[in-house]
Length: 334
Ligand code: HEM
Image 1 (cartoon, protein in one colour):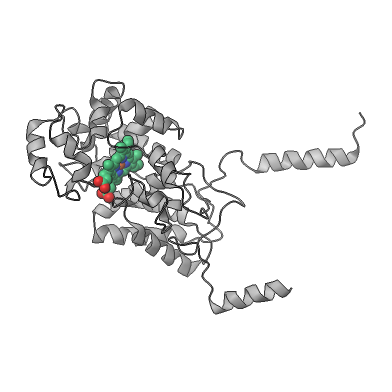
Image 2 (cartoon, protein in one colour):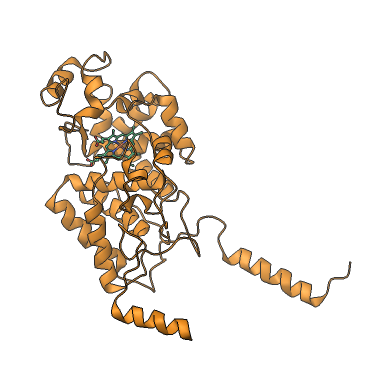
């Protein structure tokens, strides 16, 4: 077959595009450097203030990012105010929190560069800044995620998010489904070194579970009755509940993990040695946690022409002020 010069141009162009466009998610730490150079410092100021106002908020933001990424990818779908989708899944309902803090950070960014920075990116950066604000490790957040036009379904969320009753094998496979290893799963669970859980999530464990320290069970029963008080809170790490350290892991060999899904990480199975390593080497926990958060933040992002940039994280309704309304009218007649 004779190859014409047109063909050469065609192949050269395709090759150039393939070389320029990275094959994976196309996220980049410098994504907003020219379009919104102050985005990251603006988010940081907002998140630091929110954590100063309420320490637990650090935990809530990390979890919100996790629950966003695990269901349909890191696309801010969880932030949409929707009463039938993922927000009401068992693992989220009356549980995930921090929406107004993400919205405030987003509005602070909107004030300096409207319509540029996605809610999914604000949330990813917020999770990092929140971790740092309570003494945890830092990492470089890759950016360029776009927002989903709709919430994910309740069924998808209930299926993909781990449950506190899951066995070690189930936890490993739910994380493997998101390209995360057992080691990533154990490191990420280390964020239970901060934050709180409701009585309803650990009641069965403190009444009648035999793989628990008896004194710990008695202490926890005080504020978590056998019936009622479902929403009463207890710290996931009783020793230093507001510090991002490796105490969560130290609790496990003492059988003082709060959730069943915490204790299964140290129950004679394959993850025991990872827990042990994080107890003796907190630097190894810190660096594994940071690396795993980067991997988690990379789950199925919407990039390029997919998705959109929401102006309000809780809603997809366009905000039309008079000038953009006039512009959009004009553009119709151009
Ligand atoms: C391994 C499987 C996991 C299970 C079964 C699980 C389950 C839970 C449950 C039941 C709670 C208490 C929720 C409530 O009572 O309202 C909780 C809280 C929390 N989870 Fe997990 N989780 C897991 C992994 C993770 C991961 C990977 C992260 C972050 C990367 C994370 C971050 C948190 C944080 C920070 C809190 C406290 C939230 C707050 O105080 O608002 N968890 N988790």
